Length: 314
Image 1 (cartoon, helix red, strand yellow):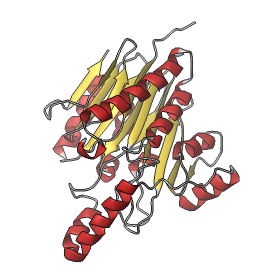
Image 2 (tube, helix red, strand yellow):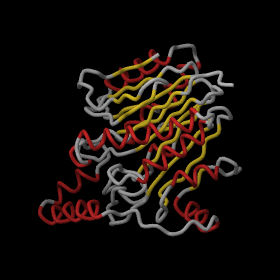
Image 3 (cartoon, one colour):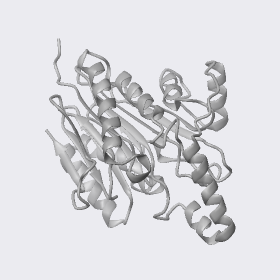
């Protein structure tokens, strides 16, 4: 017996539509993923399983910067991070800078049951071997060409490369994927996965495997995207959820948190759900590649105006 109408919201990052095939291609991809994952929820599936499936599908889509299609770091390697949070148990798990796996979110799911639930690069790779996950190269031709172009530019202008690697540059890539789900039992989960910023210093850690970028409790769940350092400075996901715990509505929590982020000149976005079924999103960046199912129909945030910084659906 369904006691709660399931709800779902996903995102494919906060970067331009131009390098992803354009508006129609991104909309088609996001809507197809929403439809498949929501069907799982509509059949009584658990929120955490829906989040893992949604992240898996987004990681498998080459146009998004997670899993297959992840950006390349400054040494020409792909390293990915992902996290999963079960709001019911308030359990966080994740992997940081893992290489040569297809779906980092699968490692985060396994770690939900472990006592050591967040692993860095070496530990993540060891876990993949223990689980006999086949080696996989997530690098695409587009990302190779993108990296080669930047390396050629480096020979011509080393200052430009320095700006690209810098954490606070507006030229930094902002690709991430995320899923927040509310199931028919009123349980919430959130997941976030990324290939990183691209061209970053080796060892740099993304917000995606921190509560700053991915957080859930029994009351609400949030997944973030944008410049990771900005998200970490705001502790955005946890801040929004904690404000809901303190008695603010999700809309109020999102609005106040985004307003604060705007005052700090950040470049970020967030998607969220609460236990009553309210869907919310907010952004300080120009674009949020988001889509959702409100229980009746699929919608998206792809054509929000720059002035539309916060939105919600009850």
